[in-house]
Image (tube, rainbow, N blue to C red; front, side, top):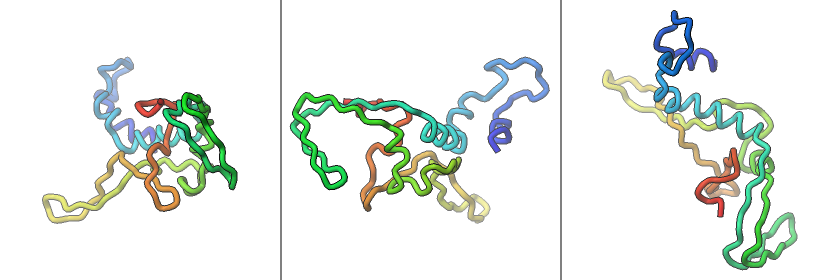
Length: 144
């Protein structure tokens, strides 16, 4: 499936040289199916830690216990635990390349209904939308 998808962006399949000119680079990086595939690989295989800084005193309830964190405390979060949370990801240990795809139905110019795929998928936990359920490298704008 992945090879067939990448083949859509090969400019000259007869070329024996592999260069950046051989691919439609923008098409590759903007393809929602490829993005979902790579996000799923990173979800399952990235073994990183996320670091968060408490900007105020906080109490974190976990498993029936409460943990107090003083303002200024650095917390290390093992990202694979988030990526394997069954409340966020159905069958979290299964590889599902389409997990990060949102598929909507839309009408095309000929009046036919077709699938429209986008990269944005919102995950929920206990009925609420998660803010950061996918942290492949544990960073980003919400790192602190």
